[in-house]
Amino acid sequence: MELIPAIDLRGGCCVRLRQGDYNQETIFDEDPVEVAKEWAKQGATRIHLVDLDGAKSGKVVNGEVISKIVKAVDVPCQLGGGLRNTETVLHLLNDIGLDRAIIGTQALKQPDWFREIVEAAPGRVALGVDAKNSMVATAGWLEVSKTSAIDLVGQFAGLPVAAVIYTNIANDGMMQGVDETTLQDMGKLADLGLPIIASGGVTTNQDIVNLLELQKKHAGIVGAIIGRALYEGTIDLPEAIQLTHG
Image (cartoon, rainbow, N blue to C red; front, side, top):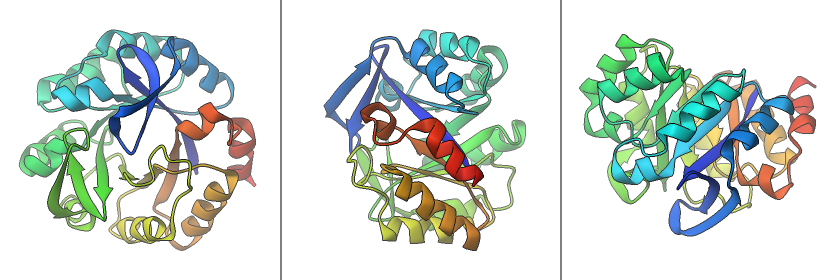
């Protein structure tokens, strides 16, 4: 299982929000490039980037720092937040050098376009599914739709989607662990046949152990994104990586 450190970008800084609330922000570092280099040095095989300003505005805002991070580390980077059109996605993949583009809002609002972009860049476009009570949230989590996570992912089963990144908003940034309902949801999503990456709420090594146990029943669970827990020190990245190799 791949453990992926998260760097959430807002105003050029590395920050974390609680439950996606822009009014509950903690700035952890003013130099995200150095943060990315540190996670790579500690053994990360991939870096997860989120353009929080982009998620809110609908276009990439922290492009300059994203480009610097991609150039500074020798591991693949993936980005979500504000990716709403083909030109932007292909520019990030082909010109900036991102390994994966993560699309959330537009996959729900324009499923045909999402299919097209997945086919245009097979294995390089991930589906970001942010859920509240198992229903999909969009626009930087500011709106909750009437579509369930299972229904959204089910539409794209069989396509060359790089991964589905599943976040339960209620858990995100709260340092309370991944709850049983979220684990069950991820198991159901994995059974649809696409690779699933857990995100939101991974707080201690026990959460990683629980995900590894889930992986034994649902092989499609391939990774976990870790954010605040790394910055607050409740998870040590090299130690956690060792667990996944155990």
